[in-house]
Length: 518
Ligand SMILES: *Cc1c(COP(=O)(O)O)cnc(C)c1O
Image (cartoon, rainbow, N blue to C red; front, side, top):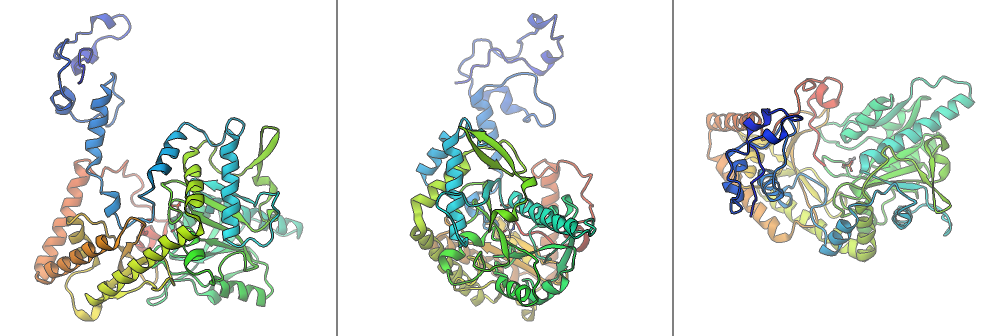
């Protein structure tokens, strides 16, 4: 039931507010009509307010329904195979998280248990990453963040400050810090470098190597290098970079350059699937690690974590102490207020599933990824990702160029999109940008039967495209481009503005690298 009695029409809104409030006519809507349905109301006949906050209230059920309807044009999260971000949690977890919606995590004094739960998570994660020695009574050095991006910003800041301190102590200039990383880094590394004035030194991918070359990375290090970024599970192919090789080269050459491991996706996979792989604090040069709680940590967005090997790697200037219940809780995040729900959700997952539970899930995902890879290979695709748990549970593939297809990966992505699947196509990182690829991320809720449905649609997509000649494929691509433009014009994919659409500073702006969705 919607009660519309007090809702004025647009023309009433021009009535003077202060001295004429009572003169506002409630004209067009029947005063006593309590039976008007959502879709019978005038709101259903109008566009939702988009630019200016409306002057008047609308009934809550109308607002709910209208926004919900608007959102149905979004993709379906479970069919979105582009993203690593969690789309399923148990009801009990959801219930707990909803109950904590109103808690501001930073209010340590009011919510000391939430603060303590964060510390428990930090401790569990640090141990999962084999932190060298830990005293039962001290908290491992680390914090929750909004995601890996914030965690990486903190890791970069800590490395930069430490480098500056060392340089100052040596009486050397500190104005030209740089960081060494793979050109296939996630965009947040470009941001961190840019925002904090650190020069980016890239190790470029090649046509057949999509991970960092350890020797090239270490060769790039100079006296101004604050650290090396190594990725445990790149966003393009899900491969694990050879962190041990980088570590060993640094040790061999007696260099004290720190390594920060970006384990955004791999941090909650490798410890369960591949515990023998040396990538974490077991390697002496690894000083900090980030992981996204909202990827394979199995929590809804957004939560991330960063941990340091030892408090000495986190310069004191970055730490602010906030007193709660007589004890100090260190705070070193970029953001102040944030919801406590995600942190609680992470704690739930870790104690509910335990290591055994995570292992069972990650094993299933790995098997599903291998099954999908085998099937796509049979369809003639070249598989670019690793199998058997030697990379993230995802499948990255491309069309075999020797097959002389007249269509590309973007055309297949478009075909799949028409069947509801979001399977993205990308252009690889610079120096290998001739390469196009597609990527399917296998998440917890991507079951074997859903995988079979996807394989069937892949087959169908290829058959449809195989039946088209070059001209037809081109028409088809123009059509999909046109549809995308139309969607933009009708506001479905409305850009906030176009002022910055031609930026030239990022790898994307400079080289056309399209960033893999995370
Ligand atoms: C997802 C991802 C990031 C960014 O993490 P968010 O949690 O989305 O902020 C950084 N690095 C890698 C390798 C990623 O996969």
